[in-house]
Length: 270
Image 1 (cartoon, rainbow, N blue to C red):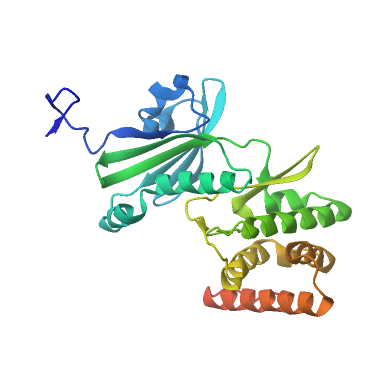
Image 2: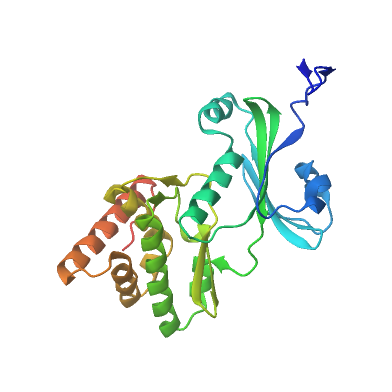
């Protein structure tokens, strides 16, 4: 049982109903009715499922003249619910990651709304809605069509982006090439991290964590690049260092990448 503001008995929301937890800076009142049932968007005309996993579905939805990214999380297992008690729902973690990026002065999708399904701390699902970033493509897609000179500038800009990310103490779960969007405008190359549910901020970000992100990027993009572009990226990331340190750090990243290949049973690459 539950009571309203006047002390009268009222019905609790069922476990299958979503409730608004937060409305973000990109919220518009015109979204309210449709987003009350975000799962209902899946059957609407013009809505595309861009990623469907076992526990997460991502859709691109045109709503009232705008295009929104809607991420639906299934949190029905006991492990999901236990984790949610301590660190919040998956959607809450995404919204928190957006806030951390913006606080560091880095681009992030504009938060529209955060919704959760369930009652109190017992959640069976959550949903985060944000602005759809239409300008960018995944790093490997963008790099594949660039000229050699453009790839060199692209590598330098990407190194500067990751340096800025780490200088802010931010550690994303996965900086693989599919989780960062890139596009070029009048101000040069722009980058946006879109996998935001496991972003952490540390007062001092250790080399182990920094290297972990560098290895993810190297395995998904860097080792397919020309050596000159790899060096350009690393010089921009590290800042002013001598050749010996540059070589040492590069070798460390390559060695860690090979170990990760072996752990995953994949062919060991350079």
